[in-house]
Length: 435
Image 1 (tube, rainbow, N blue to C red):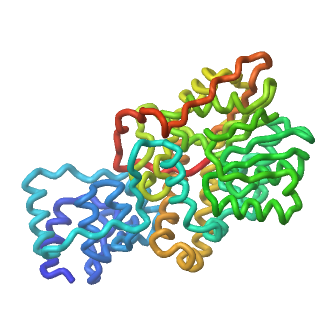
Image 2 (image 1 turned 60 degrees about the horizontal axis):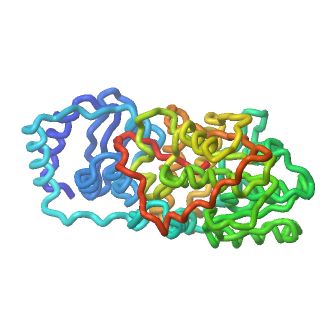
């Protein structure tokens, strides 16, 4: 309970004279919005202020929300405020008055614990070991949790609504068939699926196009469910699911290679090695489809702090130009590039709605912290596509006949190197999804 709330509320009201939102404290006192509208942020504990003061910006606000110390009655409206509203510049004396009022109101407190759902990876980025740890953090929430918001095919990448689909299931089938069409799959061909997820593309390609597929993932629970789904459809003789890093594949060539929602996790330090590996793994004349998220604006940071700690550690969507440069340097010839930015925004809208419809079960499976992480993430990721921070691209390439095969990339874990200087961070930086 606030011991002296009135002086603090007066100082807060004076410091933020223009408020397109309201603030309600745990004792019922409310600082109203000055425009008579907007979301209401509910401060449930002084820990909310402590998180924000200790880590100003997106990370502190995210910690306060994930921990439950801060809530908002309209999550979409709250994200819009965070993106568009800019707090006023406070002079030093105003900062001191506000801090003193807060200290009198809250008393002396220990710093709050960081939510258990947060992960901060150590060591050099994009080694085989660190990439595997990042994937486990993302998927260890359980297969059942993801099933609450994905479609029945368990496709965890952008669906395509722009070709007439009305339901998420239809849109995902359209996407899977489009990938097969772009790869020009023929019966009897051998196909590689990099980042196979729960096997949706592998199953669709084998069932409807008569190919055999090797799918790889770094998540053992994901691979187990994918194998089960393959067996239930009687496709075990045509689909092999492996837990394997893309850098470790050595049994090519394949007639076609699909990489769906994987390239945004490769990183700038490994993108050229990734492209060389694609060339090594596809036969001369074979096709490659690279499907992934790209940043749109030069100068924007790779990812927000919330995404890095809670969703995709080390995830870093690169600009399409950088990905294309790597593919071309490796010897691939580009034939077609297509973006699906609006389709991914609609996909995320469906996912967020489905998760909200299963909120009690989500909390049972993932706990309250992880559930709050995902409710925030799905909406924040959607706004990234809506506001022009990110898009998603399908790039269809081929390996020219007679082209020289690229040398095998040196595993990152066995050589020096890093991603270089840390990118600039932004308070309103969107979170980003997988492809």
